[in-house]
Figure 1 (cartoon, rainbow, N blue to C red):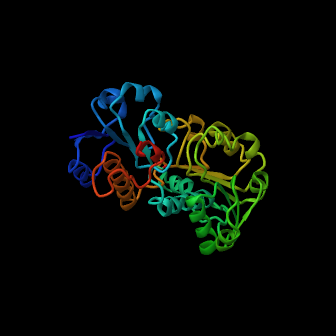
Figure 2: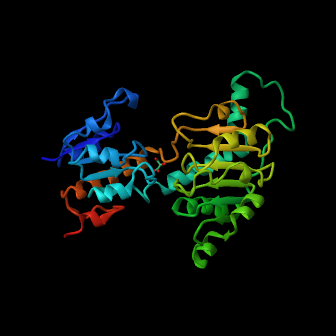
Figure 3: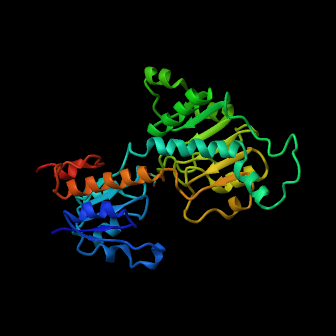
Length: 330
Ligand code: DGY
């Protein structure tokens, strides 16, 4: 029986599904640095179920010659060197689709929390500082009727655009390397603009681009300088797409009004400057974290792992493989 490593704490029912096919090594709750090195834990394993961490690269693959499948329950897969996996004959899959609406809900919630200063005002209340009603107490920016700027217009970007246009009467502008079909733009009520126009004209910028070498610091000091001083920025994409140090400075100097961040460069560490500015809402990478969605993500990764290792009804046909060519018959 093949052995697989589930490299993160996992739903029991998903572990039970995997146990029907494999010997399953599990991961206890606790700090990842208390665990033995990953290569050691993977010894003798044919497959691994992961999420947005750990890093899977050529060094790990060389140390684990028996590995044949790495299946992630995240949609973003910048932690996995797919090219290196392909050249080692290792199947890689991610989990697109199942988390779109949940992540869009959260992106919208973060944007609203930043615009309406929800966390800042809650801290003030909890600190016992609320003494009277004032006309300008935590007065923020309107969301309804404003201009939503979406940077990256994949599934999640489109789901955020729909919420803005249909639910909140927002004008939606977006920037993406490739433009949507005119019919899709029309259905979303979204207009393609250059990145510069997007930054200059939006009231609320929501960033939903995958991380890659090309998107590293896509929004840094120069881009922040183009934004309105009343604007907000929300990042539910990946750490590293925004230059967190530059953002913290722009927030401190009120060059933009507020931000909502669910992802950070070098997370789980957070740039210390971000922790000292009040006008930012910080959450620990939980945009896809509703229980039904996390279970759907885990089940999709399990489906991929079972199929990639030649088991189950879809043996040899993992549903969301990123490099299916490694399984192609010779
Ligand atoms: C994803 O699926 O990429 C989410 O960010 C969780 O890692």
